[in-house]
Length: 168
Image (cartoon, rainbow, N blue to C red):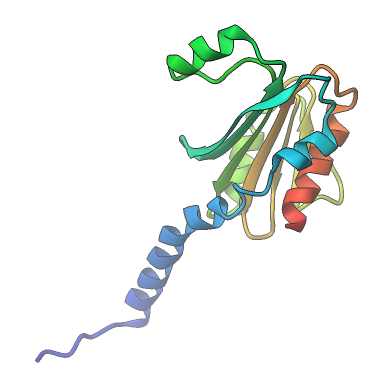
């Protein structure tokens, strides 16, 4: 039997491959953090409102979408055609970056990024997008987007949700 000659360089390559294959798993660890009870504690649900849609799926990146509001007959038709119902929405996108440079590329598309201090390794708010984007020290990128007309301070609510997810 022939003995494998694994040099330090090959060993490093194998280690990096293992890390790369583990990346999506790390992001997926966050996708089950939001419950209906949590949403009800953070947002205004009018009488008769319900959580109409709650789904975490792998699109380009692991994405969790939560939609709530009053049931409507259009919801059934939209669901029949594979569309999400209409209503208030919270969407969270997770992406495992390889380095902080990946986040810098994300930020290059923002024209109105405002730094948010004290949250993760780096965080920015975009008023135009109504979106909070951050990167953790472990290079997990999160984008939190809220479309809810009853939320007066979307930035503060997005920060609160980010803190909740990061604490879990």
